[in-house]
Image (cartoon, rainbow, N blue to C red; front, side, top):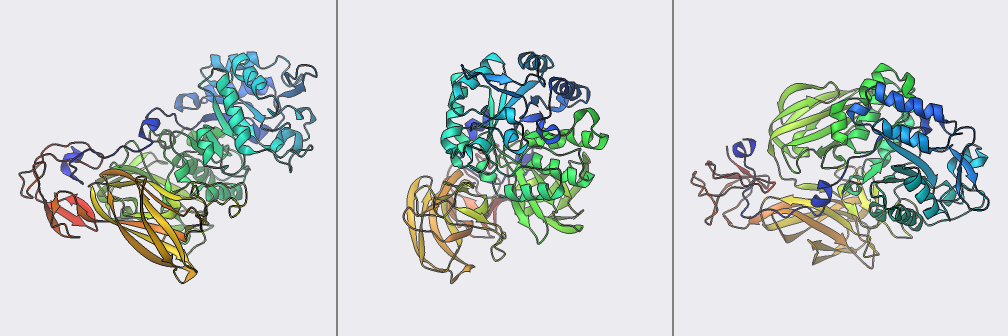
Length: 600
């Protein structure tokens, strides 16, 4: 058994469960299907939707997990002047929508619809579809929700915001995103349907409140069929992994795969949408999709990363001048198997040595290429790859050892008041600066503090032993600032006079805290004044409970009944996940780079 061959941590009690573990167990994967907008815009009709539904079946897409047929803008026919009831376009959908929804359901698929949080839709503004004026949900939330989900039987809704922004509607409505999306979600709940997925399309991350309101939410501007668009969207979403949790997802917009980009660009587009757990809504014409694009969209190994039961978005763990390495757990939290992508947005081929220690994997690592769907052998320490221009390589890695993470970049943490809608200094809300070359990952998080809600929090600090730990914070500040360190909800030390000597220079300050075996939550905050910008947190084990003589890079033995004497006569032994793995004999404990391992 792998856990009996390499035991990484000896725990005298089970670790604390992740705060979101139970919610993740019941969660569903990102939405997979097809949407009409990217190729057809408002020029849709009943025949076209039926054709795309049929193609979903005949092309084998339903078999690999695609199940939603989403009708976007263009189906509207105004409102009844007396009742306000929503009308359907008389020539595009002369038979209404009920029969079409029934047809989609009969094929074993689900049906999606579109509306706007304001009065007018985006199509009425940008596409001159005047019949789409006045058809948005505003002032008709419950009426339209009942119509869509009780009468017609739709299973999904994308809710745009053109009618809520004064820049995109003729009546210059200025609506509050949180109030509108919350009201719409409540109207859907009032229908009695608990299975409807709502996508909030605000074209930027709307705020941390959205996780309680929508199934998914747009984090970027609208996609278009071109590499610059795809590259820009990836850049916008790279550092938002902390906001994808509990089976709710950051949406990088619909797919342009199979249209005009190169095969390499399509691979990057689809592959990164998969590993970053974005919804997968095909946007091309399925009736004439080319074979290369179709095979890519049907790649079961990439889809498995997108639909993985942990529902995680990959985060950046290694960065060079030109390339990014993104990684995430799959199948088992803090297990031996992870998925990673090597992404090259540059215009030239790049060579990069992937560092497995940076993704917390040790020993011999078995690799599988997800694009080519084949094993490529075993490596140790690092793996050099050549990544084509605009290209991405994606692998699964199964290691002999899972190393305890010691470096937590600030850009992987959760900002309590994060949003991208209004001026962050006025709100205030923290932001990520990915142009900080002087920081460890090329990023820092700034504009923190001045509000109890504007904190920085690492929610998944996993350690194998309860005990005393040193937390070292890299910070940036050109003036004296302060922040408070809290561990697992308990207020801790207040760090004062934090001045690194400039707003482009990193200094560090350390505190000693007690961490529990398992998952810990570490928060930095200042409710009344600006905090320093934060670069990273390093976690170093000082003294573990029940362990005598624990020294970095040395050997240690255990004390107590549930332990080993370091000579092979041990009792209960647990791995990092908290699973008891028996009384396997071993030759002693090894502390290496503050990571507790068992010597083989």
